Image 1: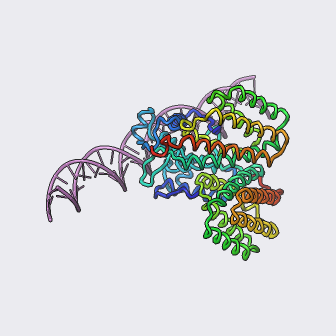
Image 2: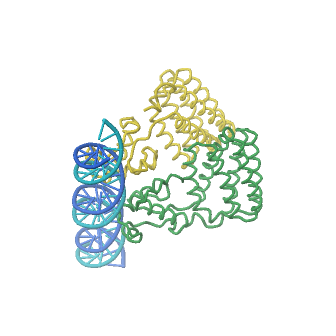
Image 3: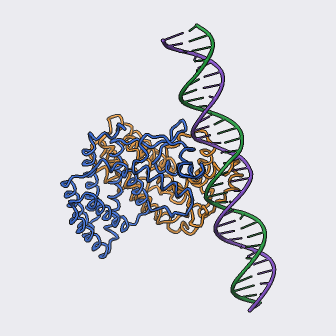
Length: 221
Length: 221
DNA sequence: TGAAGTGTACTTGTATACAAGTACAATAGC
DNA sequence: GCTATTGTACTTGTATACAAGTACACTTCA
């Protein structure tokens, strides 16, 4: 999420650090957080720590139990599926809006990213980064700050699962092809088609991800 | 949002009270909040107050300024438009999922709500409530908790604008007709059509709302 | 008279002390 | 040996005291 102006307060630092730990799975799903221990580990008092924890709860990167404890949410396939669906809906909207707002320069930029993506398709990490760059550009062109906000939250969540959803070369080539048709639709200024392509593209990614993690043990942790 | 288990803590009370004040415009858009004054007004110390404020910032019902102050976000037409768009995307997804999951009993329940809505179409408040009931049922059937969460946040935001977007009888009748076709699509189990109808329905509501508020002074506050 | 500098009042951010409630463990009774 | 009860240690929630930084107003000098 791009909404951290990062005023140099301890709470912001703790928030960033905690978030990093959660997304990197350094804090294990299901693990409970104890304030005094965590505070001394991070060299702050409980006050800014609590502020960071509460914020992460709001963003669903931590979970408050009815009894009062706080823990790292457990990963499961059903949640992954939900997240992909919401992402599909939001990216679909963004693609639609991008059609309406895109300038010639924007489309040129999108094609450049596509070319880079094609060149790197055999390298999983780089390909994904280019895919994200493509989407970031579309999001910027779409210009709906609320859509971006929610998309950021969903992306953060999915970051936790990324370790389990490595894509195959075949899948990446398929995704690249879909990205091409998406950019073509944007260039052609066809909102309905762009929306449909974006939606089905992400839903395809969902199916691939769910297949990839089936049997990987996610959900049992 | 249905995510307040309401553990009986002061922070929860303050959160609920502050949120109510914001949505009811008792706290004016643009107004700045001062912690000591607000704390004594609500009869709590700054600690739980701050917790509530931070949570509301996370939910975008309060806004943190770079300089450190906290204020009630200003209302403007552009934001309304963005919110309707995101709501359209999410409700569209929900309609799609509802098609897949709806049982005969669910469809019966939807038709009951429709009938009640038809009977009350001339009363703006009741009609809106029935419209919300219809959507709530669809959301429940759709069963994507993330979609519901984001939809809740968007709905909260829009609550602030509701005072300016009173609908006309004509608009309500149109909405009712669209709801009928939506339920028909769900009953027929046609996800693509249901998604399309839901999207266009909300986008229609957006256009009506934007027309209603043009000249009502929103955005100047 | 205008502008610059200084001082004061008040803001938010943080640490810490305290209170209330919860869970676990140990002991006693059956 | 098992269950119930009590006690202790530790949890989170809250209040308050303190520190650092900011803005505004007043005064002083050009």
